[in-house]
Length: 606
Image (tube, rainbow, N blue to C red; front, side, top):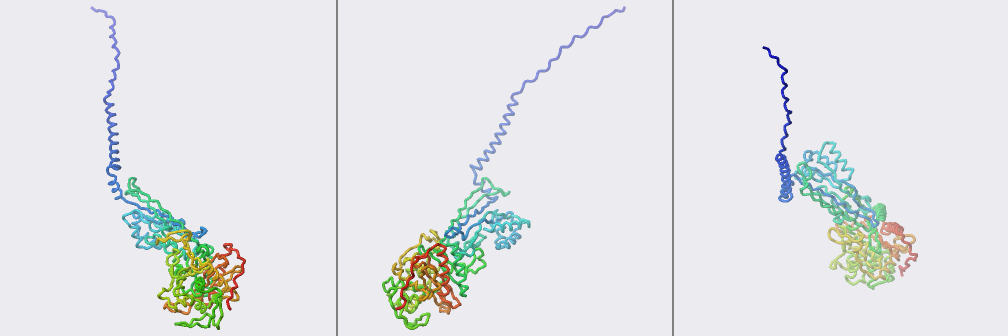
């Protein structure tokens, strides 16, 4: 039987599935990560801290030693040398821009032979010494040449670079410059090159006052690693340079120039060997000009003989001749033994123990005053007057005038001259010394002695340095240090001045060429025999003229000397005109007016 079925019942719907719940965060893991991170940072910081403590606190010296093993550099920091100036601040010598050529042997060693060849040729350096410095294994700095003119130094280094040669560098290093060239060079001196190219004072004021002028070089010291870079914690120190101090002289550069030119013309015009000229400020003893001929150029000293490097006016000694007679005459007057009007009967020849004494001119018996003896420069009359001295008296006076002693102006090479000792001072020697033989002087010595008469009988030490300065030998010199002492009385100096005026008188004197138009001039000629190498007179002569103006109010004292003139002239005709030119220039330059008083008319005969 078939049974009918209705529709099948639907299955009951499944209940919806809920999303699975998220797991709760695990806080322990996050904390762990943070802890690990902090730990890593802490460890790193600990390492740095430990290293810092080691370097700065526990073992800095060991670190420095390790750094030193890598390399140490010492660099010279050059001091600027002080200038040498004239009395108005104009330079005779100064420092200008220059360069030092240095080398880093760590870089230059490979090309050392080629570099040494280039440097020795271009800079006149010793090849082997330069080669050694370029190869020095113990340093990264060696200076090769000091104080090289900037253009020249740059050209040499550029040439090396073009050739592919490494290791040279340039550093500042002031170079010495002599803008006045030969003007005052006999006194100024010059800088040469010493060992390893270090500048070295060679002559004159440069040498005498080297410490003051040079100052003190500084130094930079630092340590480098293998890369050549500085090590921050190494021994890095800097000692600054101390620049030198200027030296101011008493010289007047323009007057020095003119004096040198007049002297040169005078020596050449007389066909002489050499000459000297000194210009002093009568009142202060300051040397306004001191010239030698021949001389040299400070900028190119290598072109001249070394004998030129020392001032002849300080070093050369000679018999002064008749200029010395004014010292004899003033001493006699000061001692109260004669006056400018004392009368003498002067024979044609004076017989003495060892030889007859003659005058330079032939004459019969003359009746001369002491003023006349000075005016015509009589040797015989001077010896007769000097007979009035007591034994040793003239020598004492000459010592007080400064003869036989260095002037002490501060320059090296100065001679003391020769003044015979008491034991050597026989009557014959005394006779000859009275008129300027048998003793020797320098030009500056004699100028200072004549200046004593001009300064009213007071001797003031001559000076070349203005103010005060100390030589390398430790002597303090200069115009502030100049000694002053009375040698003869003011009256004795006045009487001597009046006698010296008669020397330039056109009628009675022997040196009218020494006159200065419009001014009173006092002076004295000198003509002396010269001693040859064998110690005997060789037939040549020294001629000179020394004097001052205005005679009645002296402002300048000038002394001119010419050695071995071959034109037959004497002190009046050769040195007298040079004196006149120099005195005319000096009086005009300094604006000294004439006094307007009439010159002396002392009687020369009786």
